[in-house]
Length: 99
Image 1 (cartoon, rainbow, N blue to C red):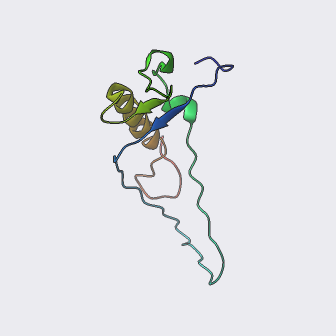
Image 2: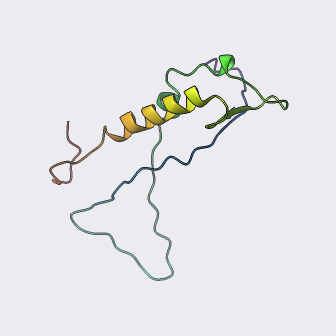
Image 3: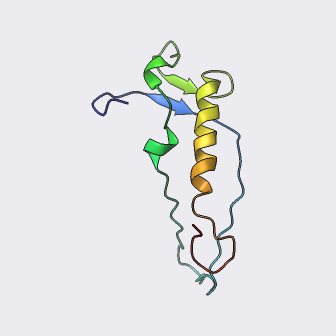
């Protein structure tokens, strides 16, 4: 994608995935205090292999990516999401990401 081009798009999916947060020391939850968990998403990787310039646009010029429009792009995004989420698994539960 061209870094100087603005492209309006919308991705909609009912795709779901399970994930589990674990910490050998546990998680501290305090009353009246917000606890945050950050999820890092590598957007360039998420859209790897996708050419938005070739996508179909609606009458407003918006690229809608869902099961009815540009579904091939949605399949690629979901595949990329699955690939990236498998990178940081701790299969042996030792508190460190496995290679």
